[in-house]
Length: 274
Image (cartoon, rainbow, N blue to C red):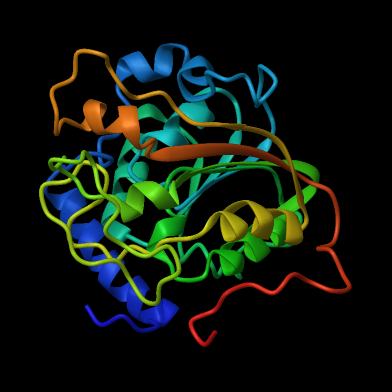
């Protein structure tokens, strides 16, 4: 893949095809909620307690979250759920679960950086699993999330850490080595045999100034941040859990909508033209 900028539309097209294919083949992240998931859904979906113990009656957006898992869990917990995803095959799983379990879930096919089908300030909570890596411009996502989130609303999101996207899958003589530049243009190279990335998708590395600074500049304040612990001391070299011991793959962020995006001077960010 050439090291050059790629439009959001081109990335959307490839990633829609890729996730449709992953859903058809029942790959990981495409498994609807099971009975065990729904017995105590809020504990299962919010182990950190960031949602305050209840989402009953709240307007909740599951963003880029098709697959029939999260939408069902929050709906069973009492939220008024809308799920947005780019992949019609993933959304078909949400429709399937809703029909089978008698859940009221609104389904919207859209890209996470264009939520024009949704009204301003229409959600009390936005929950977004790992997905910002599939678009070149994370700020476009944050601006749309800020627009549809009500004042004082919560935005809970998980992202792939940039160092994990820079680092090889298997250890060499010196361990897990960084092979991709931090300041880069265009999508990451294709990958196979990795649990840290999804085959067939286009992924983009977003720097910390974009992931966290960008969120703040778009009208959110960070209330908490954690790195999910996924390592095991007995993991074999090359295994997912072994790599996680050296390179944490994800970061999870709790942010609150505080008002309009900051005005005035903005810091100079690196761009592909820099």
